[in-house]
Length: 118
Image 1 (cartoon, helix red, strand yellow):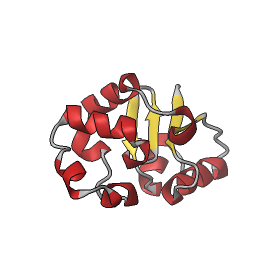
Image 2: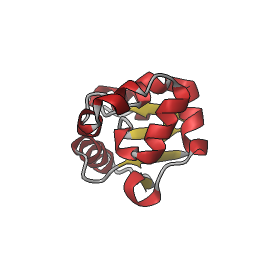
Image 3: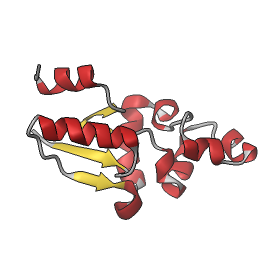
């Protein structure tokens, strides 16, 4: 089983996911978007699974702080990729990759199902 958690360490949702994983005794490798960055090669398979509309977090602070014209310019996968490469904190997080499949955000019930815990 191949697993990795992606995100930003100071994000509250990432903190919740990491705490939950720790409570379950699971130590997953963590990819810090701020320190390790994001590549198009990383984003492409994610976009195939969930689409750019879900991967770009339009409820987050980073998105809300963008100028209107920058938000309006995100209208397709190519423009979404450009934005995510430039501002990785706009990616919905955490991204949990398990055996090549991804789950966005943290929902305890979903994680229980994914990991077969109670």
